[in-house]
Length: 356
Image 1 (cartoon, helix red, strand yellow):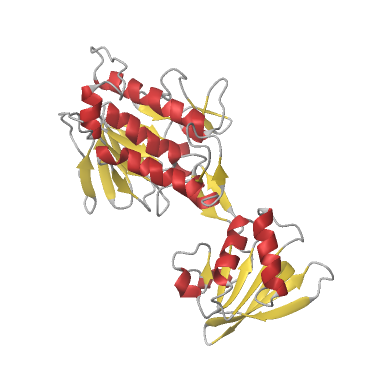
Image 2 (tube, helix red, strand yellow):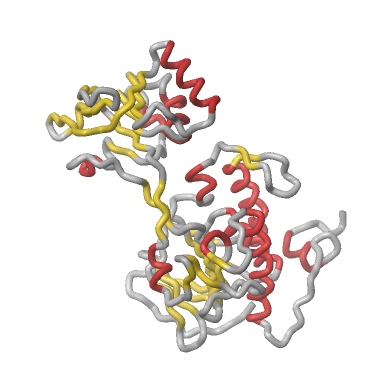
């Protein structure tokens, strides 16, 4: 699809152009890549997280999902992997660890989208940012933030980094228990500290954790971090105030893993001049276009009469938004509904061998 633009070149930024910029690489954003591809529309996908998946991979990668059509059960991570595979024939370009800092409509009618290292000019923008960007809920201990990413971690990227260490895990949800179970066999010691006796994890994980406790491989305390000791510039101990009697204990520490959950923030979306209702982006429910022509919003970030925050609903919105964007690009052409089963055009775009 050929088109011209007056791109604003920003010194130090890599500049490119595409048909659509999709903001958000969660399930709904990934499915929109597929639907746009069926329409012959290319796209770049931006996400502030380090990998695709959004809430699915950040909040419940290993938990079962039961309401995806034709898939009786799959995990959040499996769903994301299947969506990436489904979109792959259309060769989307993904940009992770990329938060949008500028979204500007140019005089040409196109849009300029910038991140810290990328400048993209496009014909339409599709916001599929879920509940917004996610940041970890941090531990509230004065001075401990200085050790973030050296001895204090809010996510596990390389499990072997924590092998042979004295580990303390803070939290009582699925992530805290899952990583405690995964690392217990490899740690010099592992202590899990939860605020209360009630865990917010699946029963099987709680039972497995209790089994490790009975085997002496995990220690469990109920309380909260209240201070730390350092030695030669390194964390050496963590102080815990116990819930039951408010007494304080001191535990040896090499690495502190904190899983208090993620805090959603709309972030820069709020500064893009869009109409909001109850801190959600208002859209035309027939096209999912926002108050700014050429900018569309689908998934949990939008609102309209009868809105349901379901992945299934987001998939429906992605399909209709793709048709609307196609009509925006070709206003004088009639956009026909074609079927992947019979359409040679769609099968060619999907790379299907039509001789079979």
